[in-house]
Length: 295
Image 1 (cartoon, rainbow, N blue to C red):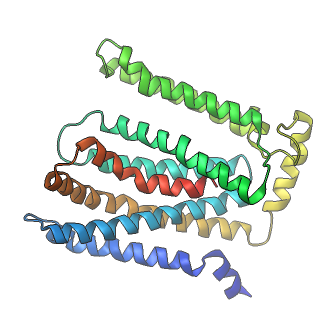
Image 2 (image 1 turned 90 degrees about the vertical axis):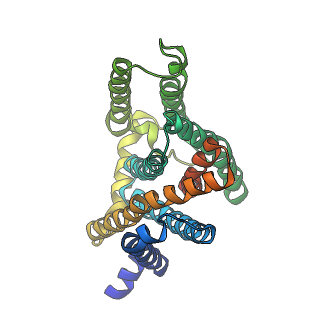
């Protein structure tokens, strides 16, 4: 029984993702400097790109899968927060790999975020909505939570991506402005988290069938149902195991992103491709993972 429960917590596909990603990470840590050193041949760069891309993509799916299981076990709104932090962690790692490349391109980070938002909010969400309707028909959503999320996205997007075009230095924040905007953004997100976890948590809980809102008087019953569904003799052990697996899958993404940056920069120089197009293409694994996250 114990062996069967262990297999259920960590299925073979997860073991395969863990072992293969750590194997590739170890090989590149040991031999990556020699493989990707100057001069770098086209065949070596192509093979390295394929291996790194597939490994990062598989690890990203693994991260989302473990985060999804943690989300179901913890219940709402903690589950949504776990999923969000996991996706943001992958996003930040891949964008940092963009910034680690050679050359001075101060807007690459902003452009990458903007590209990710366009792909996720339009393409990925559109596909998920259509696929959800095809599989399940009409689906309930918490309209109050959707409005809160969209309002926060619009506000933060305007501050980060639109406001710089109207500052004293067009397209950029000065040092003082950047510090002030960072503090303001942190405070806004802190207030949003307080709403999500405390004062208005009913906005971020799945409503009952046939309803699109949860009344304040019904939130206690919803919390009791969540506690019942997440309780169990193996719940703490499962949480710890899945959290460790999640971190173990994130680490290869962190360490392999640097080598992916080297290969991508070689491709830019060899093909003469537009720097912005190729740099932004590094967020593709993120959009693939988000397809699973938003299902």
